[in-house]
Image 1 (cartoon, rainbow, N blue to C red):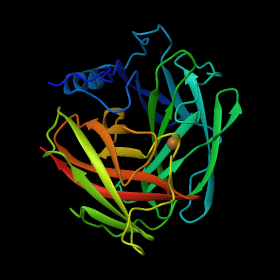
Image 2 (cartoon, rainbow, N blue to C red):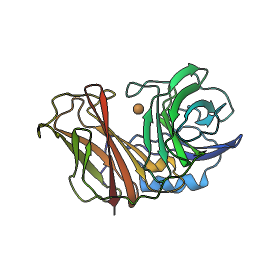
Image 3 (tube, rainbow, N blue to C red):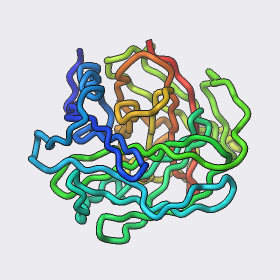
Image 4 (cartoon, rainbow, N blue to C red):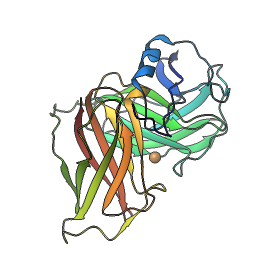
Length: 286
Ligand SMILES: [Cu+2]
């Protein structure tokens, strides 16, 4: 297997229960990579342990004072980050320009939101959003306690309202979002456990030329969030790939590694002027 400098193990996967909210947490999951070897651990470990790398305590996220969301109505979510002994985690490090990245997806992965909750202090983050339809969602909180590793916590929620009609995944490799055409380009067939370059070629549909107003998004040429199509989602199913460049060009490249075979959804995000372009793609990994 190709060893990459950014490969880091998932140290532990936990399932914690408190007050009805369930958070599944992986501490020490590095952004892109979960190697299959580590997937074994997460089914077994349900005891809080410590991050092997720095001795920092494992943390989890839980929803506090948050109402049941109703579709098409704004809902304010408050997330509390705590240690396993229940103490508030107060210090966070900014990464990719934010203290927390919150991804919200519907169970069928048709709905995707990438939000940056406001830090209220005392370990609490808050964000207001509107879920477009009823049904099951997962909140994926990605944060970095000071002195500890980046942590991914998953909180399943249900929204009241009519669930969506089922829609089949498409194998389309070009998506047109507004006036931006985004073409997915893979350097090789996708194989679980192998590093792969995932690139996106951007074109302005009015000029048929590369966009001239591309700018970095959250400090990088672009953002790529990847989720495995599975229920329930676990931290190992979440990949957050980094762009290979800071400055966006016509083709924006990412390196990642899919941990296991299956269907995955990719959301590539780029910034044009003041607008964020989010392009979704389905891929199959063998
Ligand atoms: Cu973010």
